[in-house]
Length: 67
Image (cartoon, rainbow, N blue to C red; front, top):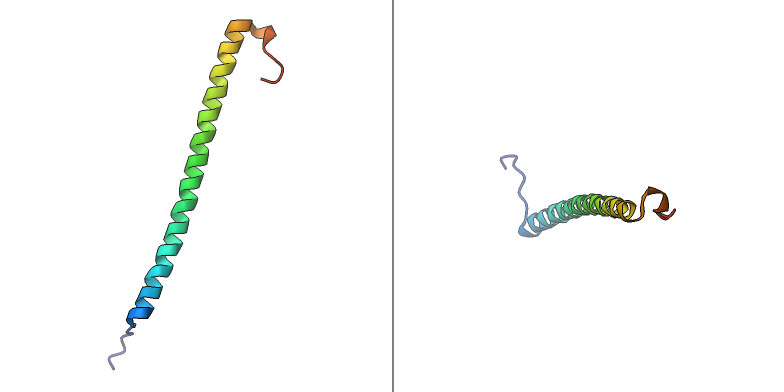
């Protein structure tokens, strides 16, 4: 033998599948984080806009307490 490690087709397939699963999980987590951040930003922009229009429509003192 020349000291090189040989893998069978099954071992190679197992290694590749494991790497794919790990990478897929990492990508899913990254996607979820990005999506949650974008949704949070969008909601904040929406509520800010709504507060502005309510304040403009009703006057600053008449804006409901829950906003």
